[in-house]
Image (cartoon, rainbow, N blue to C red; front, side, top):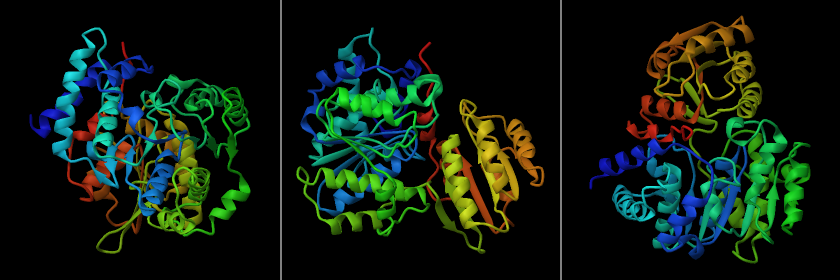
Length: 423
C-alpha cells in the first residue's frame, strides 16, 4: 500500500457518512486491544477555542519535558496534521501502517458495523499514541461530546471551552441543548474545567458535573485578566480566555503531571496554531491575515480583533463559507469590518453560493464593493493591490488559501474534512 492508497481508503469511509454514537468505536477499540486504557488524556470540547486550548496545553506539557500526543480536527491541508507527537505530524509511512491495521480491525467488525471516517481515525490515533509511548494525549472532540467517538476515553480532566450555537442539526437548537451534549464528556470523579459563561450553558455544565461528582472549576474574569501577564504567541484578546483555561488545567493536574510555572509561561509563549489570526507578510508589503471564523461566534471574535487592529482604513476581505453554517449571520457580522469584499467559490461540496454571500454582504455593508470570484486564487489576484487582506470563513477555505499562498503544498486531503449524515 502506498500513502495515496491509504488516503483513498480513508476517503472511501466517507461513504458511511457521519453519525454520532459510541458503539462502533468501542467495538473497534476492543478489537484493537483497547489502546485508550493505556494512555492519559486531557479531553477538550467546546464550540470555539478547542484547537487553541489544545495547542496551548500541548506546548505547555512539551516544554515541561513530557512526550505529548495531539489529536485535533479538522486539518487545514494535510491529514497528517490531525495526529501529532511533540508537534511532529504522523509520517506518511505511519499512516500507511495505521490504515493497513485499520482494514483488519474493520473486517473483524463485520459488514453490519461499518465505521465512519472519524470513528476509524480515532482508533488509528489511539493505537499510534500507544506505540509512540506518549506520556499524555491532548484529545479534542470532533463534534459535540456525549456521542462523539473521542468520548470512549476516561481523561485526567474534562475541558469545555465555551458553548455557542453551531452544528444545530446535530447537537440541538439552543445553547442549553448543545451544552448538554458537550458536557457529556464529563466522567465520574474526573475534574471539569470550563470558561463557558453563557447563562444558558453554565448551569447545564454545573448540573452534569454535580451529577457525576466531578469537581468543577469555572475560569472567570479574574483568571482571564491574570492570563494577560503571560506573553501569548497567539493573537487576539480572546486568546487570554483560552490561555487562562489552559493554565487552570495545567495547575489543576500538577500533582499528577508535574510542571513548573516557568514551563507554563514558556509553553504559552511558544504555542503555534495555524489559521487562527495568523499574520503573513508578503513581498511587496502586503499583509494577509488568515482566520477560520466558521460560525457566528467565531466571526464576532474576528470582527472584534479587526476593529481593534485595523480601525482605518478597513482591510479587504476574502470570504468563503459552508452552506450548512449560519452564513447570513457570518456575513452580517464581518462585512461591516471590510472596505472591500471578495466572495469566493469553494472547492467543497458544502460550499455556500458566493452570489448569495455577495448579496448578504452588500446588505450588511452597502459601502463596500462585493466582488464574486471563481476561486480563492482569483480573489487573491483581484486583491493584490490591497495593503491588508483578511482571508476567512471555513477552515477548509483557509486551508485552500494557504495552498494558494504557497504556505503549504497542494493536497487533495482537505476533502477528508467533508462530512455528511448517514442516510
